[in-house]
Image (tube, rainbow, N blue to C red; front, side, top):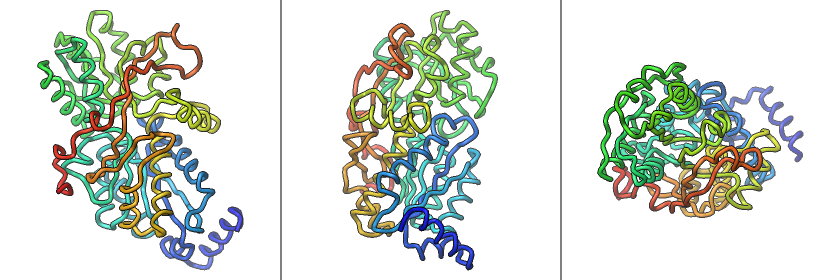
Length: 402
């Protein structure tokens, strides 16, 4: 049956009175839900790009698995935990959704994880970053795919401390994500013999960072750690430049930074920043092929979150195919069993605590004169093996780990 005829048949079934869950059961296909930030602070790093990436994974399966259609639905969560919980409950319970992917903030991820446990359905987190997701708050059906606050803190934080950046002041997004970055990076700094001189906590989606930057400036810390992301990080860096902070001798450390942020800032402002990403489109032939394919659809290169949404959706579908069923426990077992080898990573494995472990890249933003083409933004300083970048399994406090 063609995709057009299949869609028509499903629409007709809805007309004669089948509900969402019944329709999914009748069709027997796989239904994926994507919960993202389409309109706010994290829309550039995920949003529509995540949805397109998931669609690309579905296209790689020619729109069906086990001889049945693959359907995807999406919704904007408005970065609110209560909306995330309500959507996940509705989708799992009433609309026959088999797997949910994305989750833009740690609070929304943790809320949806509770629904994942309740309904015994798979959740894959590709945007949210708190290391608690696979630590004390780990869940039996949740996978954490892209990066986390521990991996970024240890990759970027360690590199900066080794270069002499041994006193830090944090500007922190005032919710779990920001608190986790501040905690995890602070531990790295202290373990290396450095000091954390203080922090200023800013509400999510703040427009004016002047008071927080003033506190950071007055601290005299060598490094101002940005425990935020997306447009909040962009605004902090822009306003720090206006304040003359870097000209005055203090340096910024962007713990969670994306290529879309570099694009928005421009190389003149971003040059020299040391960042970490799980994916860079210009790393090798494999990443370049995916980057080009994504660019043809979105007219911009993918962020690591968007590449990871492709990867996790593809891996889920491979697991369904290998299991011969979409039943949660069988599929999740196959997700752990199968290696992750795709455009995002060629060395990934899904661990017992739900952490997908893979190498991370330590990168430095190029000077304007070093960039030879659009989106040619990074110098690769090192590829950090996954077992060095991510928290050891025994140290996370996940109750699922025996």
